Length: 415
Image (cartoon, rainbow, N blue to C red; front, side, top):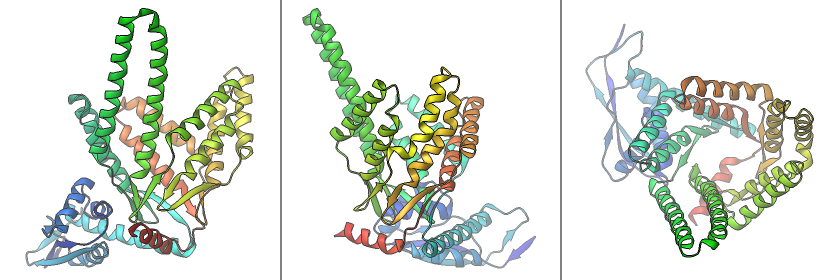
């Protein structure tokens, strides 16, 4: 057992910065707390109300944590405690928190240093499986008890947690969505569906001969409504993600998005799937060209022929074996995904996805088995495994002078 003569209290007294969600994400990682609680603390400190970390840490740990917190925009003071603290062979929670602070800060600094030198920005995902599982269970149980009302808050908390623990080049993402945004969309959808149902009832009662026409029209409107909700989902998610204070956005009109998928889906049906590579390529290129980071869009430089070989091999095997050869898609789909990412670019950088089909299928099959044997309770484990997998195998390469690019995009946003 080892004794130290003093311990240190850390106090956050003020904060100045453009994005409390981003600062909250960092704070959540430093002190191992809930992301929503961390954002509340940032807003509290920004109003001039100090916040004191409830545990003591050693002076050595404080020396590493304080510069990191100040770099985030916090005004930090430390107060020495003359009472002794004991560090046992099995570290106490306070000791573990201090070690994690130093470890995370060192890893982030190293990631930034290497990415600046090599132009390779790697993704990372670090989260606790019990935290994810608790958020999922809370979402399911409370949504059931409140007839779905809690789902707006539960989904927001879950998305914020997952994004705050996803980082690019050591810099975490942030999520700016609110439950109120989801509530507005949900209420609008419910009113539209209720109005459609009432209209069908009225038409049927007044003239039964018009009922088939009304039902067909209602079915088309309902399908259009589902497509609209899917488009809104994509727009909402992309427009509430930030990295280093710069926001993403998805700038596509619903009419263009719907026309693309209607045409592609119809031609795939009429050609028995032969149109698949063209549709897949057009949909990927459309989505990436309308996804912006700040004012800069992503872009796709590939053609449908790039993915034709694995697609048509899998299509032919499945067709000529009357479906028994469909496991060939376990090889084809990862190869197609690798091809798509290899031709996706941002500025002068290119994405690299290096997961082979064997590695991908080990992860996918493992996730399926976890869900089956846990009766769905292991969904948090599946989420953790999937996000860690994609973070480990996806990177942005060749992006030169990215800190300067981020500064320019931030400057453009402020003006």
